[in-house]
Length: 263
Image 1 (cartoon, rainbow, N blue to C red):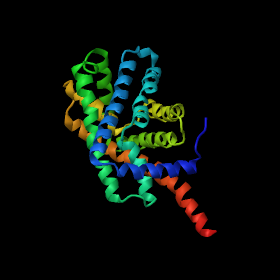
Image 2 (spheres, one colour):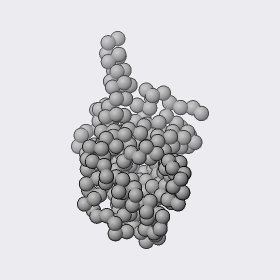
Image 3 (cartoon, rainbow, N blue to C red):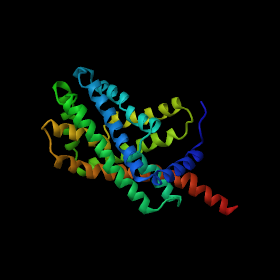
Image 4 (cartoon, helix red, strand yellow):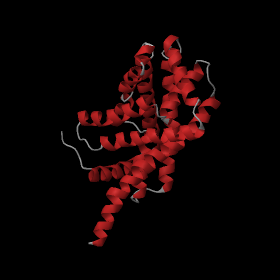
């Protein structure tokens, strides 16, 4: 199974970031809606798989849910979608390389925040609430347990959890650029995404699904979502932009430029 070197992945990430900010707004919004919906579908599948698992199974129940959650990013990367958290890595490294402006970066992040939210809420309402996939029985209890656990974290804990999450999500996107074939991309995506879910880290777009699911069931409010949204968003931004984009830019782009300049 052929793959690209980290140096080449950095170059491909820059190219991807440049393409992403060049998308026409209607295309960006459409792909953003799809990515939000795909991540929500992955989370919904997680809840449906793990919601009825006996309590004595312990953490294995969490692993089962985490094992299917990567569907969301697989669909986003392979079928097509624009995900805020992935772009926090790709567009940032393109900015560091001087290929996009800060204005383009902020525009991209803003519209993806909006469109990812719409896609995630769409799934929460129509599939979670209308079909009852998250609003009844053990699956409602699972949904509420997830939301309550997130709300129990302090602002700083949610922020740090967001960093851990998007460090791994950014790496999943980064690794997907290493592969040229579908099987390689799926394998590259699966491990980091499974890991962040199993570890309980917080993903801002995934939370755009699970909080509304609880809200539509009548057990949470939009203020609860907003209180969680801010620290997780900031943490995800740091995780993807700093711990992936900046560090790999320093290692594989800036470092190489310095070596060339010194020759």
